Amino acid sequence: MPQRKIIVNIATSADGYVARPDGNLGWLTERPAPKGFYGLPEFERSSDAKILGRKTFDRSLQMGARFSADAVHHVFSRRPPPASVPAGVNFVTESIGAFAERLHTQAGKNVWMMGGGEIIGSFLDEAAIDEFIITLVPPLIDRATEDGRERCQVQGRNRSQEFSREN
Image (cartoon, rainbow, N blue to C red; front, top):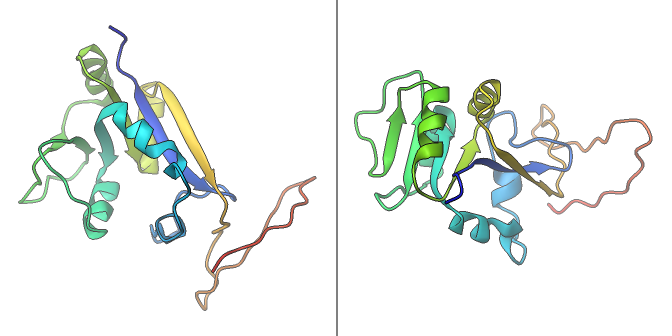
């Protein structure tokens, strides 16, 4: 039986961001979904658990995510769990290294490391990520200007590309 893998599967904007500074994911969630939805349905069938950092978990709840006992979600946090934890959510207290070693030896499908950036960085520091899948999505999100309008800016040497944005 092949060993389970911990796989980071994230989307990034054309300018390299995974979220706006305030955590907003509208650039990704509010656009029309392409056929095959970036391969996500197929990927989800290959995994049976997810790993999230606390901020990603809290943001998921704010966005209306539903958790159930049918899908295991491991949440890493330095803070205590909320008073009411949804079914299927496990707050992890063990070290990343011990957790990853335990997951690798358990029977099951791959584990989806959803993010955010801090937990991905911490798993990288422990050499506990087996694979990355990074999907490039066309919008440029850069940073918002003071009046809230987005500005598009492509920087870098030898880059010359015309971009079209949907509003």
